[in-house]
Image (cartoon, rainbow, N blue to C red; front, top):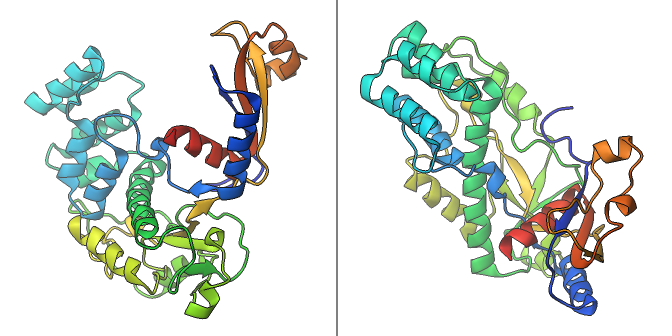
Length: 346
């Protein structure tokens, strides 16, 4: 399995204390199936701490290694005392050896960075950041791409509404979901200043071949019969095509606000070069299923877990003493994303 292999997933979402009659709930679920909703990336992509992951990704994309390191390590409001004091000690003394004794074991990224500082010195910000596991570092970059995509989705709907228009992009083929971003292979030749040995041509072409999706811009005539559910927006990158309408300029402006040039997203550290991808503007949960059920215990389980199933307990066993009303939504990956998004948006 690799990033983006999600098609076999199914999810069950339980909403408690549903104070509506069955007819209204059914109509709302049918409307969700019929109308869909904007396919935003959810909060999980950006984290719930005072420092969102996309802010770190933005610093990475700008090559601001000291800023990226500060965002990972410095104190954050709302954290536990133990964690806050550890961060505070690092901020005050910049002593990696001492800080490692204070940071809890579960803070893997922070401890990896501190190990990098301990080995290379407190000024070696790029090497310290590179000590974080690669998959975590790339999460920061993906989060920044997702942040830009969410903004562009809002801009697209605000400007043109929920209909296909001239210049919108659609996939040429019905390609199954690919990873959020096709990224180049890891690079070991990173210098302390974030520079790398240049390797032109061959490597860049290889990255392009990793992207499976091809798109076209709709003409005015094609837009008349196209579905909004076919429209895609690009995650900003070096190998994607942008819409041939005003949204392309908004991409340029939003990236410029963050000090980035849409025409120069190839990073000097190769693994941070954003190659890009395409994501459907709207989600349509066609395989959504739902049921209203009563339950008694407000903290009791209302859906069987994998462990329950292994022990021979079914969802019916879990719910047998139910009294209050709840809504159980069962869906595949796309539908579950829709259900989760709809629940988030209220």
